[in-house]
Image: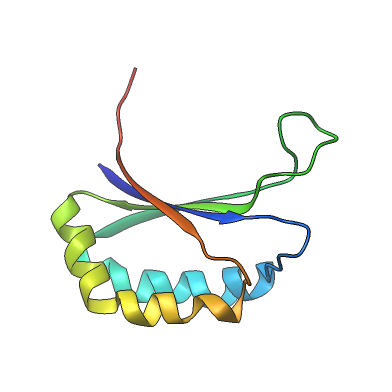
Length: 105
């Protein structure tokens, strides 16, 4: 499995509209990328850093799961501009991304 991990940094000045993200952006991502092989979306909302009383480094970490890198590449090649163009509607930060292969221990 291939995972596109998208990390939304949290800073003192950053804004992240969780409701828009969950109600508008993620449904748009699923609608556009499922026909290209998206098989799952995993979201983790940051609530703390390394200790419970510290601030989280990320507001949200999302994984878009595909079977192959080709599916990811074609899907994002087709709909990436639209999906990336929606980012300013819910956050003021530039997300960080990483493509990973799932491994099991």
